[in-house]
Amino acid sequence: MIQNIDLIKKIIPVKAVITHANNDITIDSAKKAMENGLIEPILVGNEKLIRSEAEKLSWKLKDVKVIDSLNEIESAHISCQLADNDQVSLIVKGHMHTDVLMGEYIKSEHSLRLKGERLSHIWLITFQNNERDPIIITDGALNIKPSLETKKAIITNVINFVKKIKSFDPKIAILSATEEILDQMESSSDAGKLTEWSKKTYPNCKIFGPLAFDNAVSKEAALIKGISNPVAGNANIIIVPNIETGNALVKTMVNFMNSTAGGFIVGGKVPVVITSRSDNVESRLSSISNAILSSK
Image (cartoon, rainbow, N blue to C red; front, top):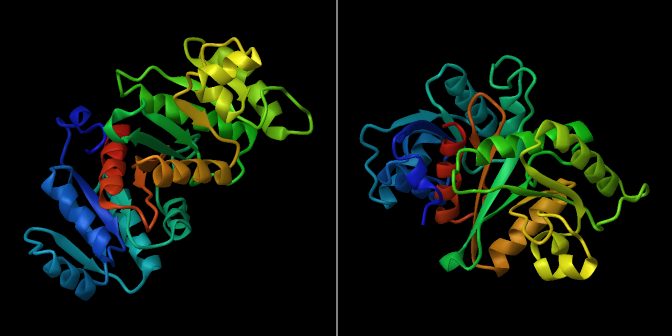
């Protein structure tokens, strides 16, 4: 099932560029996204290869623009130009490296990076048969070791996103390896500072840390530890201290818990869908639908 498609019915399809669409799963995802009414795609990459792979999928590419490029660097440049010129409102990473695409995205020659805003990545995780409620992990794909100020931006970006999901009551846990503030553990001291900052900045939001992962999502663990806070044991948004933690959490959920991860970058002129090159089609479609929702 495509995540949150019911929330974007009035604004789809959107014009989207598929950057470096040079493999079968990228082209199949673009085809299915178009068939599901999510996007009107522009495919950028090796034109001969794209048309060959599309033919294998019985996709005639009627009314689909294909732009030839020599390599992923040129694909990234063409795609960012299209977004900069308002020809597309969504960028979808194809079979290429994230750092190449985002390195182009933030170049000053484009106006995609907004003044005063910071980019961050959001993963929305849903579970098969709704075995448990959805959970958001941020940032596990873009900001490697975010500073305190960047963590504030990550929180702001995710709050702005979940406001668009009316049924989602955010309970934001700031992750560490402990529920205690320890000077020698930066993630815990940052969490304490962010909790105090949030009381003034977002007084109506439930934001709390530091919390270890079990204390964040397990009521039993929070009770045993004697942690009395509405977020403890009930968190549905996890602010991770670094990219390794977020990446490992999400990939553990995907590979061991039958979950689907829809990932995208917010905070710029247009959202960017960043998928792992090993992601399946369902995950890619969910990433696209959530990215569209973020720009609503």
